[in-house]
Image 1 (cartoon, helix red, strand yellow):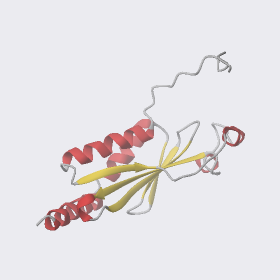
Image 2 (cartoon, one colour):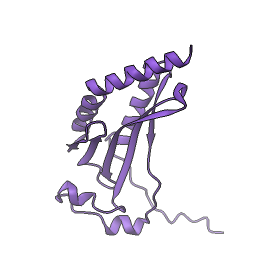
Image 3 (tube, rainbow, N blue to C red):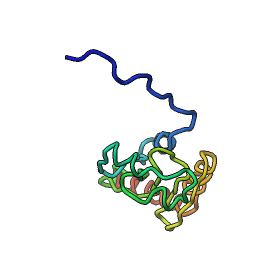
Image 4 (cartoon, rainbow, N blue to C red):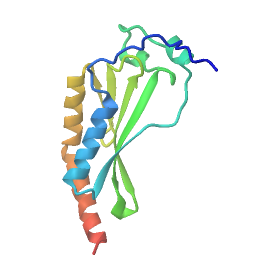
Length: 155
């Protein structure tokens, strides 16, 4: 049994807020604002890649965003949906984040309701894109309809 530490010093993480953390915060806020009638769901598709595949496929930082997320080994996808348990767990898919595992930015945010893709070069741009999508009139109508239907199903 080997008890020798062969890892060496592990790297520290930077101060950038992970996109998944940001979505989970918004999911929690949605639950609080709707008294958990609606819940935000953050999920990832199931896929596997070896570290070798990820490092081999790492693009140059100057590469265009399209090249940065061109293979499954490089690309991370995260889904944000709204679920209503009162409606048999009806789920409305709001957006998809697509980013490179090792560099995060630039990343793409696809607004699933309208099909628009926002390219974000920084955390601030990501926050702006999320605010536009989550605060959109279309999503407000969806939330209102889900709350109305949930209330009706409780009668």
